[in-house]
Every structure is written in structure tokens, then in C-alpha cells.
Image (cartoon, rainbow, N blue to C red; front, side, top):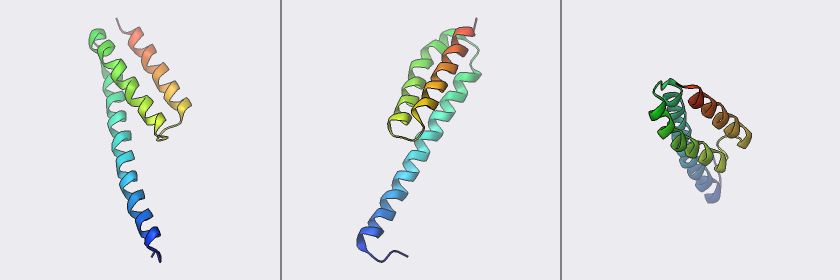
Length: 84
């Protein structure tokens, strides 16, 4: 157990941040999965910028690596472009 007030505060802060990061990551993963399962090109084209924005926000907050974000966006764009 922590012995200092600052350590107790740090534990509280890290718990809140952990839960917040988990929520952001999970919601982005759900959006990515829904985009990958999409078969209608018009819907996928509308959804792609929103998903790309979510991925960029994850990278900005250091929840995922910036190169992983780039790879995800690239693969999703290829997928959307391959839809007929």
C-alpha cells in the first residue's frame, strides 16, 4: 500500500486514465471491425474518415503507436477502395 498522499493520488489518477484509455481503445476497435465487415461501398466511404479520426486520436494519446495507426488506416483505406 502507498505511504504518501501523492502516491495515493497517483494511484487514483492512473486508474481513471487506464479505464479511459481502455474505453477509447475498445470503441475504436469496434468501429474498425464494423468498417471491415461493411460490404456497401457508399457506407464504407462515409465511415472511413470517422474511423481514421478515432485511430489518429489513439495515436495522439499514445494508446497505440503512431506507425500502427498508419498501418491500420492504410489497410482500411485499401479495403474500402477494393469494395465494388
